Amino acid sequence: MSSHSTAGSLANGAALPPLTGGPHRKRLGLVALVATFGGLLFGYDTGVINGALRPMTAELGLSAFTEGIVTSSLVFAAAIGAISCGRISDGWGRRKTIILLAALFFVGTLAVVFTPNFAVLVIGRILLGLAVGGASAVVPVFLAELAPYEIRGSLSGRNELAIVVGQLAAFVVNAVIGGLFGHLDGVWRIMFAVCALPAVALFFGMLRMPESPRWLVEKGRRDEALAVLKTVRSADRAVAELADVEKVTREEEVAGEIGWRAILSNRNLLRILLVGIGLGVAQQLTGINSIMYYGQTVLVESGFSESGALIANIAPGVIAVVGGIIALTMMDRVDRRKTFIIGLSLTTVCHLLIGVASMALPVGSPIRPFVILFLVVAFVGSMQTFLNVAVWVYLSEVFPLHMRGIGTGISIFMLWIVNGFLSLYFPSLVAGVGITGTFFLFAVVGAIALVFVVTQVPETRGHTLEALEEDVSTGAIFVVAKSK
Image 1: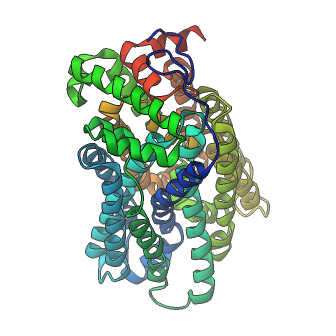
Image 2 (image 1 turned 60 degrees about the vertical axis):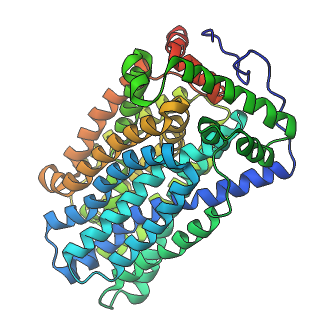
Image 3 (image 1 turned 45 degrees about the vertical axis):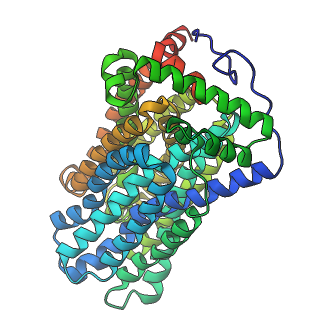
């Protein structure tokens, strides 16, 4: 395909039939709703530790280091879950993998809720981490492969919205349960137990959902793929899309382009993998998940009481959901690169302002905690509106089909590894250099990430997955990026 691919065109140059309304659109919406319970679980399991950590520490006698282990064990396990489930979904199917993850969420929740000691707690967190990482890699790909290109951004982005809804739910549940039952031993177990409900909903919901039609084509199951497409597209659109997917799949087979062999033999595929890794790492180095995991700690450090911080911590959760909704409205209208650049610019400024405020306002100042809370909320809002949704959508769409599981899995593996180290050492970092030094450091890293996005990240919005696949494989996508 030439470097000037026409948005919405097929691999043979013909135009796709227009997207239409009808029962198939409602069906697509239902599939997306059920699948994003995986994102909801992702959000709740990563956010619940924010309010559960202090009572957990008191009951189990955790030290600062073992607190870090409990928090980061989920995150490091998520890295393994992302890379392994990406591969599993390539061989076993997206749908079956998500069903497996639902069962893992449930078992991990039981292990945490009924844990008698620190060791079993860490095992439960590792199981939850494997499920969280798997969901982060497989659910966005599942949605992207089912979505029409015209609404792929907003449909795939619903998973990130579900993640922040899950985190907000965790913050609210923590505040409510902490307020009502905070005097009870084991109150943190109740906070975790809530996670079992969406796990059950995901398991039984996915039993009735279809498999990815693009995965079915790759496995030679054409008739099944067409049947699935006809449930989420008009009949003529389904036939046209199927023909396009089959054409690209045949070309890959002739060229012998499969998985690692293709990546290592094609510098353009290797380059797009490095772009995916760099983008995932850049997202985490903003420190967003340090705020989501240790928000209460940061707010206590800034001057709030423990109970006040638990309530104030809901504000970043609320703004994350609002930002996610705004992001979904932009995903099909604004280029991915533009949102990345705006987002990294805003988050870097917020980091600088948090550092300045914590340095300029002395400890004990009555306005210090509220100024820092406002800036933290501004940071989370900027991150969610311009970066988080767009990054997850980008990683789900930029890789060719034959390496989508591997590419997405490796990129998200690196994302989770960076997340894990930040989770493990963030309490020590704040204890060592304070809020001031911590957020100045985030600002420096944010500026570097901004340069990376401007110079290396190509655009993906407005093209079918098959058009993107050809442009990535030939390197045309990088030529177009340079010319803009």
